[in-house]
Image 1 (cartoon, rainbow, N blue to C red):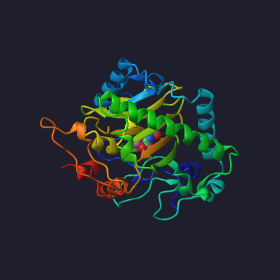
Image 2: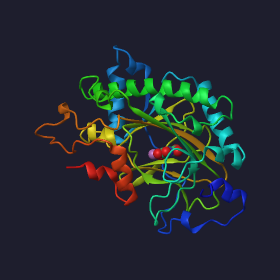
Image 3: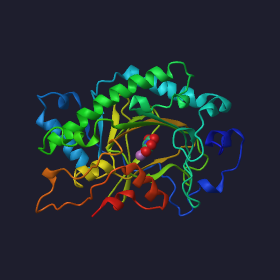
Length: 338
Ligand code: OGA
Ligand code: NI
């Protein structure tokens, strides 16, 4: 098994070449703060949706591809517990975490950045990657037994995130004056949800090393629980990086490539990255909400017309397409464009 970033630090090794962005495109912490809208999900959930809140959502998604969600139904103390078990897991001795190690050529489990190609520059992060939905696809051998409440918390968190996914997808449709279920129906009956726990150790050279290199997500939407104290996530807009402010009680929700396809490009899947920090470590938890693999997705009818022709093909199993293209250093969404 490849050495985790954490071990590399514990062993006091020099910064390995394979983490260094030589083109000078390392991280810059000091970038403008994003003015991304804060959307109150409780105003979107009911049949008495606030038109103003819907408009905020629509405008956030068409300009940034993301928004901060508040009043999402998960209490701050629950979010804190999830952050806490995440920290506790990564703080376990290396040998304990290795019980959950990813196997060769597999995504699930504990490990560092997956190596998909020889030229790849590695991300300065260790991860625990788990399928959380459908329940019968969970592989419990990768689910930590310590901390003790990890499994129960993740189970409950998954349930709550599933609700949020539905509220957001329906509201997205409504914000475009479409029928409520037009996006959600494309998920199929057994959508996939995967949880990626991210741990970003302190890094001696944030100017040369990234926590996660620039990418857009292959999901329909991604729901991110950020570290409560340490910033790091940045989104690109008009060739400029902007950092996401921390709102402790909020979840950051961004659209992924599959909503870009379903919305016929009206909501674009934003490019984002994570910078490293020499003073402080950071954690986060991303849940990727993904249509059932065999379900075909495509631009919804109401968004294709004379003035806006269809821009994307019908695709299924987009996550596979995503990894194949990513591996070749291509932007995966281009493979779905007509
Ligand atoms: C991701 C991601 C952001 C973060 O896991 O795809 O973009 O803040 N994570 O960890
Ligand atoms: Ni991402």
